[in-house]
Image (cartoon, rainbow, N blue to C red; front, side):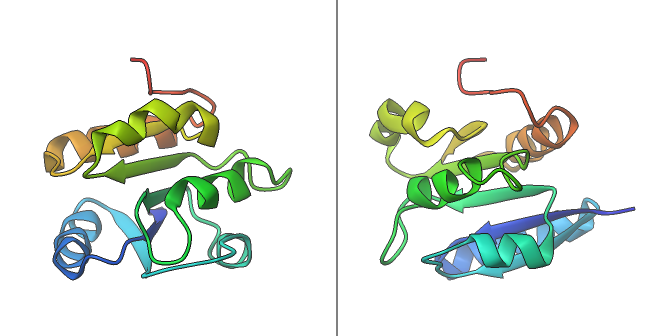
Length: 128
């Protein structure tokens, strides 16, 4: 059975890369270019992991992460935030994400982080 990943990203080039990479590695993916309330989409799609860009139009990925992590029914879902702005790392603990990946990223590292978060969704990889 394939694991599913919900991705919120508005960079067309990155969406193109992830659209080819993740299904080839056994993941079912759904993309959103933006979201103000991510909970309905998460409830409907039931992803095994959520991958969020930090800088999105309208709302940042950290706030979307909090929507998931503060929902009793969704908080078990691991969330990875990625950003081209490393200073975002300073506030990541406030968003309760499981992992952070800086852009540009190595695709092998991304796949390793995704697999680790899906295998151990309760673990934080921020300080590992």
